[in-house]
Image 1 (cartoon, each protein chain N blue to C red):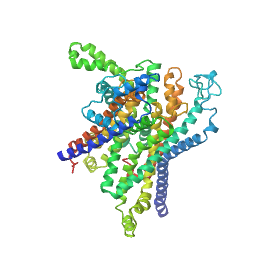
Image 2: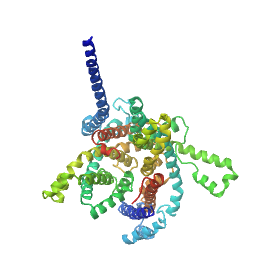
Image 3: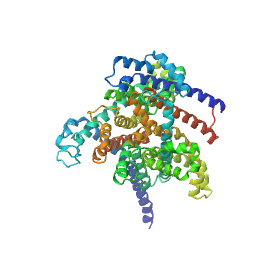
Image 4: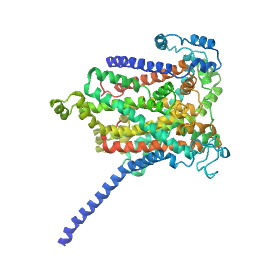
Length: 300
Length: 334
């Protein structure tokens, strides 16, 4: 009996441990699953964009007069159908991934490279420099991202480079504000005091000590801004202010297909779906990474 | 408080000035000549010169700039290059269309977003409820409003023919009837006109509202999460209060304060959304006016639209900041 009595708690604790580890595994899975799905889709998008010439079944600008406005699968070689010029929708959507990804990555990089140093400078130096930088950022923040990008791209003219620049500038104030708020907390840390005591100048403190410590949070937020940039690019192209035709971008495929929604809804359906999946992927990655890695950013 | 309001107002002025300057100079580097855009490629040099002089585009940039600022302060944005009549008149006609769209989509967003956010926060440990709700929110956040608009048009306008494909209804007629008092003389006509406006408004409001609901649901989820971890909620539960009362009486009211913060963000997103929504649904409004003006290189019209957009956002943010102190007395301003 004594053995049995002794055995019981052992069994229970084992069962408890097993439950706990199962629960922990489930919790880990629950947390990492969205990151995994998002990363997988994002990686697929990168591969598709990079290998567009190899993957796309046809040229995105090739016109087939015998297959104008044909539905998905009606003509063998056009899996997702064709548009009003007889161009293959699948090939155009695949090539469109390039534009979206290029603009998404380049504009976020632009915003990062321009905004982060300014934000750190504002946070670390304080005083008039901070006021000047932050007032400028506030002024730009008065414009919603799409509106500011729209003004810039309207002024410079629609092209891939101008779109990158416009969205990049529109995203910059977000990076300035975030980098500043991170720098404000970091500058109070003991290691900054130590670095200063050892004779480090302002620039060295910012570059060697403040910047590396903001990087973590900034990269997480940057992945969320890729989603914003892709959506903004699609919106600009949809409004006719983005990459000029015949270069395919998801936004301009959708815009061109608008006239044919009655007879040929597949043109708008597939390009819209591509935009949504891409934005969703980067949102998933950014969101989940933010919750997992940096609870400080939950409110951002 | 008064000092804070004054200081906040003083900060808003240079912000507005800066924003207007950006708009002015951006419009001036716009590629293409507005006179060529108006008169076509075939216009003679002298006709083009006359047009440039009439529009005041031959004056030095600094003169044009100060003139623009001085006029804008008095809500005089000049005359539209293409239509010829005052921009402020045009804006006054378009603004109600955009306003009703923003308001209707705000109602949709609140009705969909707030309950989703609350339920998702309260049932966060039940993956069968929390997961689908979060996925809906994420889909709403990722779905471009113009695509959702097109899908709604395909289903409800083209396939089932329930809602109109284009237009915004006779909103001008409705406002005119209210202003002239005809609303009391012909209540039937008035109601018919209102019904027509609502009929045109439904799909755009649903499209914009659903995409906004995603933002609202996320923010109300985090607001609710913050509130239910407070001590007074634990106290309410400890004294034996039923869960339903805890949520409705204690949590919901307190949740509204952090939710107020989003009105500023909300208006900014909604106004941007109207640019796309009005274009998709071919609805009159400030957003569509802006895109048409940019395409036609109609500087005064584009400047006017952007200035009104920016002004609205700055003013709304100012009002929201002040509302905090009224709603939550714990917040004090230095």
